[in-house]
Length: 302
Image (cartoon, rainbow, N blue to C red; front, side, top):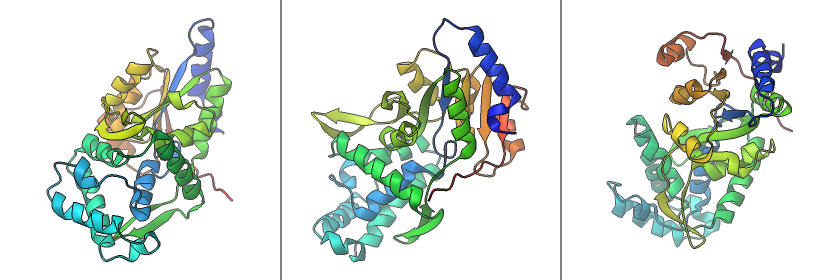
């Protein structure tokens, strides 16, 4: 049975048609692990490090980094190096380790909001057009890259992203039944946009972490609310007064967003986690409002 034929969706579509004449019904999706296998926010960050895509020293935008002087010295050494041989420069591995450790260590310390926002702040000094183009190019590259791992500095990091078949079918079915699709992601808004514009979702219906624009150049100052955990609901409410009938995510971090949806909630188990643990975190076993996709299918590209 196709996911689009699930009984919970039939109930959802009957309910949405019953309110014909009112506002269009709303469906919200997380991005990483939900619509795609992989993490496009991380993929863009890894490529930034690989290609030294920076205009401002990270030491300048991370004032609480404990080794700012060393980080800034590595940045300046690499900024002065020949781009063609930069990855072979003696400073590259140390620089990559500082950049990766600052992100991963904050996630491990449960400082998820700050760790994810600090990644986006590394776009300081670029124009929005430059960041969007870099993000589009990265998605195209990652869709062709092998799914797995690659070496970056002294670490192994994830490689490749792919669209998930079930999420693709859900988005198409919802669109065919008159739903507006919004993305609410804890990654950078501009890195998530090309994932959803592939489905015809407008950029202004994509929510993610952003930083302030000052006279056409991005600053290092994040805009609040940071759309992570319960703050995803806050960020959605800023732009959209409708309450979603439908929400989909792969993460227990998004349980508040899933429970915010009134009719249909989809958990996509792309990380092969325990369903028992997930619904313990939810606080109740799944009822007929839930769709569980326990083995999502990767859509392979040529």
